Image (cartoon, rainbow, N blue to C red; front, top):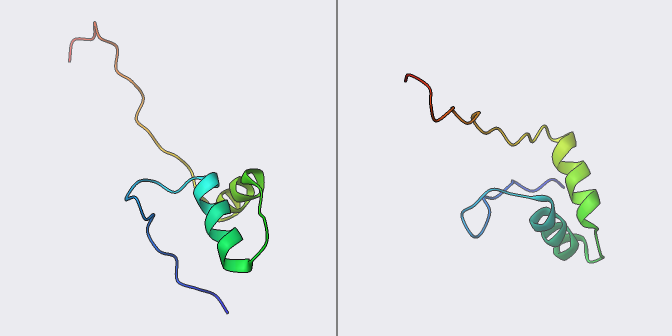
Length: 59
């Protein structure tokens, strides 16, 4: 049975460590951080941040 995804308990972004810890508690066995990252990638997670602007730009 699939569970509804919940926001991160600390209010921040989800990451592989948080996902691995949650999954470990949910299924009752250890899940590695790398496996957590693989699951995030399968779900389409991409950390999108804006490009830094040049400090000498005219804007």
